[in-house]
Every structure is written in C-alpha cells, then in structure tokens.
Image 1 (spheres, rainbow, N blue to C red):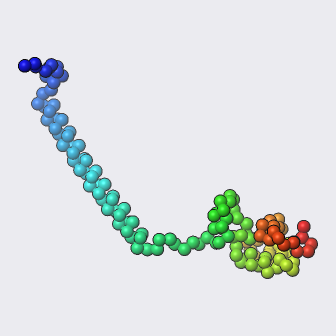
Image 2 (image 1 turned 30 degrees about the vertical axis):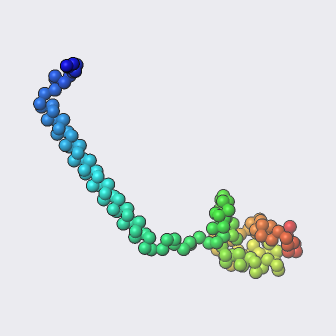
Image 3 (image 1 turned 135 degrees about the vertical axis):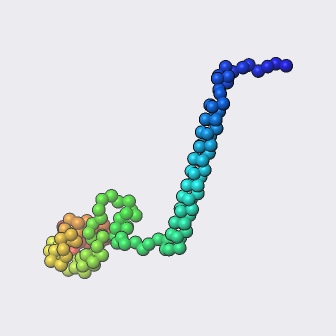
Length: 142
C-alpha cells in the first residue's frame, strides 16, 4: 500500500493548538448565531413597518399647487413663475387682462399682494404668450 506523503507542518500541531482552533470555531459559530438573530429582528421590524404603512393611505394628498406640479411634470428647470404657482394671483391677473395694460396690472398686483407674490411686466408678457398664443395682445401691450 502506498503511504501518503507526510506534512511536516502537521507534525508541529499539538493538542493545545487544536483546542484553540476548536474554541475559535465555537466563538465564530456564536457570532454567526447572534448575527442571524439580529437579521431576523431586522426583517421582522421592516415587515411590521411595511404592514403599518399599508394600513394608512398609500399616497398623501399633494400640498403642491397645480402650477408647480405641472412645471415639474414637464421637467422644466428652475422656479416656476408666480403666475403659474399662485392660483389667486393668476385669477387676479385674468380678471384684469382684457381691460388693463400689463403695466397697470403689475401696479394693481403690487397694491394687493405682498412682495413675494408679485409679478413683473416681463413675466406677465411671457405668461400671456405661452397661454394665449392665438389671441392678440390687449391694447397698448408690446
């Protein structure tokens, strides 16, 4: 019978080294068990959170104005015009657009709205061109 070659390093392994290796293997096994338990707790917590969120409404009503939502939907960059994002300002302007010039409308807006909600002649003109392309500008508007 052919004898396998001997490993000189195996001759140097003593009983103490084997016991140390067994202890390290047991320690690793305990760590793995602890990690499995922690993973099971994490999964349970996530499943609970998911189940609780399903009980409530799936989508909260949007607090974003329709103008801002449309601006985002069209993937436009930057901040939308006050006329687009403020329905009250838009209604105010629409009520005056046929009877006043852009300059008069801007002055009237300044008298009725705080500075952060105001508009300017150029913004009003851009809005008019974008939203009323087939109509002519009111008198004295250029």
